[in-house]
Length: 224
Image 1: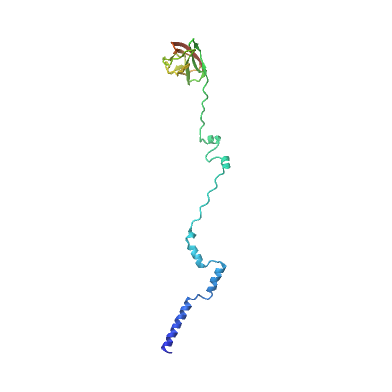
Image 2: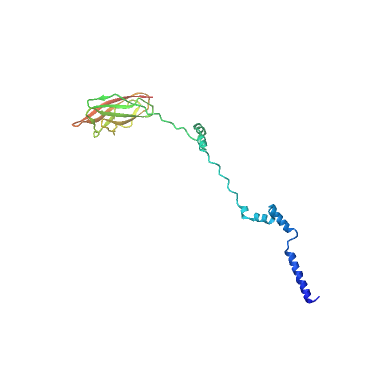
């Protein structure tokens, strides 16, 4: 064989080896087509999907529970609350004492004149040890009016047994044109019927004159 013949043979051998290396193995084409037809993922596709970032995404958060309906809200009871009996039984709240309504005020012995009237006013009954509010009241009659510039004062007589006054004399009247009053406070330490008395000084005026008045007034109090 000549040198040129050997070179041609070597070239053909090299090309044949290259073709055999690049060609797929027998049956590979049919397997690829079969996989595409059947829809089954190829190993390469499965690997790509496994490594895809989408496969590592966290699952969506669970949906929040539905809001309570208005009807259920009206029929239910908020958490942490209970009936009055339940609250008291658990000691969560203490009962609040309700003070009784103030006793009605009644008038004591009334002293009257043509220009005025004067009396003590207070409750008919009181409790031992409790402060008792009284009022020394004076009114103006007819054309007269109460004189707020006059130094109006109530001075108690010596206190009966078991009675003590908050002051030796009381002033600071709440003035009105026709009716005024001076607050008086006392305390009873013993029970029984107590007579409170004293002198009420005040003045009434009309358009031409002012009349000073000194009236002796009294009030009976039952202490229990």
